[in-house]
Length: 178
Image (cartoon, rainbow, N blue to C red):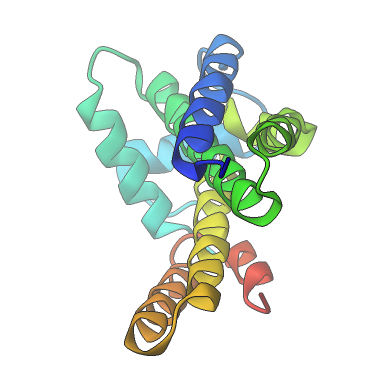
């Protein structure tokens, strides 16, 4: 029986979102979190190189959730971005391994890693940057499976997503060789 990437990805994303939400920082945390929240509040630019796409996306997200404080809303933004990242990882693993249980377990292990978990529970630019990185890998994988014009469309989308590295976070470029 062929595994369905969408079902496995959805379940993995929901499970990890529940875990991240339960461990979400209620407000400011140490290091860059306070600076990023202040930048989102004032629509300013945090420390170089600046992350204007993050500031705008986090501001739009937090404006849609007026019942939460700005800090709590932005922390939740990180959790949601990270949960989508885990969902993409699960989808990729299902397509590569053709085993939904191994893919589900692999995605949860990735989500439980300290680096991803830390940026998933506080205001950090790494959560949306990791999501875009995984979307680049997903589109590149899809391009490898297609032919002709459909393949070119996926390649163009992957290049577009890589272009988001400049206004979001240059760490996205790590996946460019893939």
